[in-house]
Image (cartoon, rainbow, N blue to C red; front, side, top):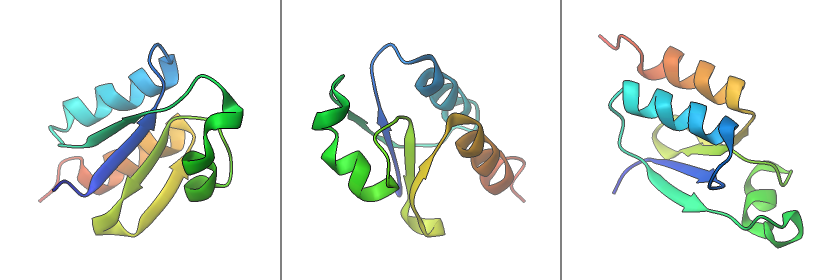
Length: 84
């Protein structure tokens, strides 16, 4: 089981940026595709407090619902980039 989960929407450019970073860092992750309807994104809202995507969960690092692609990318690069 991977510790990283990504809640995303197909065709979302912000989600694509996060996925590109995950791939560049060679990180395994579990993808959860969400509904186009914000009203049907209960799980995303429960973990992040909002309905926008992408949202990242990283169980190994205590991240339970990090929203905003730029924040997610910064977290991934700081946590996994050029890891010793």
